[in-house]
Image (cartoon, rainbow over all chains, first blue to last red; front, side, top):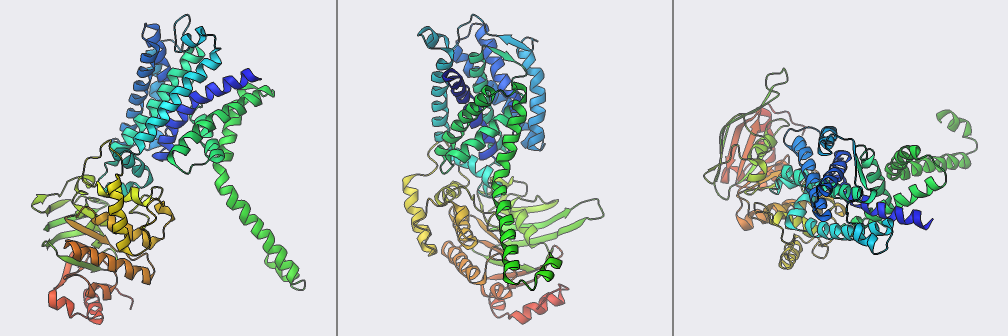
Length: 315
Length: 257
C-alpha cells in the first residue's frame, strides 16, 4: 500500500507541473488549451531522444521545456494572429503534434529509455527506489516552478498577463498588447507541460505517442480538486493547491484501481469527476432554489388549508 | 490638440444592413477643451470616441493628436495618449486583481512592462493619497479585489486609472449612465475635478441634458454620423434644457420627455 502511495505522490508531483501549466492557460488567461495533449508527448519525446543521443538528463529537460514552449507558441499564433478560436487552435496543434512527435521519435510510436542514465540514476544508486527518487526530483522541480511563477506573475509583465485574462478590454485600454500576452502565456503554459513530459519519460522509462491522451481532463480534474480542497485566496496558495490537487487525484486513482476498477474505466471515471466538479458551483444554487421552492410550497399549504384547492390549481 | 478630419466609417459594408456610422466627420479640440457630446441612439457618439481610441479604424479620413497622425495606430499603442472610461463599470477594471494592482497597471500605460516588481512601495503612498481624495473610503483597501466594489466605486477608480498618466485626450462614454442618480452625480463631480485640475482635453458623451449644459466649455449634437449643432462658451452656458430638447426635435431626433 505504501508503495502505491509513493508512486501516486511521484506521479502527482509530475502532473502537478502539467496542472500548473493548465493553471496559466485556463485560470490566468481564461483559455481552454488542448494543445497540452500533444505538448506533453513532445516534451517526453525530445527528452528521450536527447538522452539516447548522449545528452545530460538535465539538458534533456531543458530541451523538453523549450519544445513545449514552441508548441504553445504555435497555438498562440493560430489563436492571436489567425484569429482561430482558442479551443480549435489547441486541437489543431495537438493534431499536428501527433505527426511531429513521431518524427522526433525517429518514426516510431514508442521509444524505450533502457540502460541509459536518467535523472533518477544517481538517486537509485544511493539506494532509493524509483518511486522515491522521482518524488525528490519532481518535488525540486515543483518548488522551482512555483517559485519562478510566483516571481513572474507579480512582475510588471506578469501583472499585464493576468490582467489580459481577467479583462481584455481594460488591458487594451491600459496599453497592453493582449495578443502578445496570450502568446507568451500559452508558450509559458506549454513549456511547463513539456518539462513534465520530460520528467515523465525519465520516470516511466519510455515515451509513447499515445501518452498524452486525456491529459487535459486529468489536469482539469487536479486543478478543480485542488482549488476546492485547498482554496485559492492568493496566487501562491492557488498554485500550491493545484499541485496538491494533482497528488490527491493520483491517490484517488491509485485507490480505485486497488479497489478493483478496470484501468480502462479510468477515463470515464475522470471525465465524470470533472463534470461533477465543474457542476459544483451551479449545483449549490440549483439545490438552494429547489429547497426554497419546497419551503415555499410547504408554507403556502400550511398557512391556508382552505385555499389548498386554489393553490393546487395554480401549481 | 485633437483633430478629426473628414472621418468616414461604415459597418456591414456591401450588405443590406450597411450603416454609415460616421459621415465626413470633422471636429477640432484645442488643448483643455471639454466637449460634451449628445445625440440620439445610433447617432455616432460612441463610434466617434471609438475611432479616437482605435477600437474602430475609419474607412478613410484622418485623426491627428498633438501633431501625430494616429488614424491607424493600433489601439494598445495609442492607449499611451488616450484615457478611457466606459459606460459599463465592469469594463474598466480587472475584477480579480486588487485596487493597487489595477492602479499599478494604469500607472504603466504607455511604458514598457519589464520584469521589475509590478508595484513599488513608493507607489502605494501615491495611490493611497489619490484614493483618499475620492472620499469613498478606498484608501485603506488597497489590497481589496476590485470585483468586491460597487459600480460607482469601480467607475471612480477607472477615472483615476484613466487620468493617472495625464492622457492627451480623455474619453468618457456615458460613464455615469449605469449608476444611480446620487452615485452618478458623485462620479461626475470627481470627473470634472480631475479634468479641471489637469486641464485635460476631454470628450464626454451623455444623455443627461442638464449635465450637458452644466459641464464643459463646448457642446456638440450629433445625428446620423454628423455634428449638426454646436454651442460654445457663453452661448452654451445660457442654453436651457427645453431649448436643447427643441434642438433635438428640430434635428429629427426622437426624444421622450
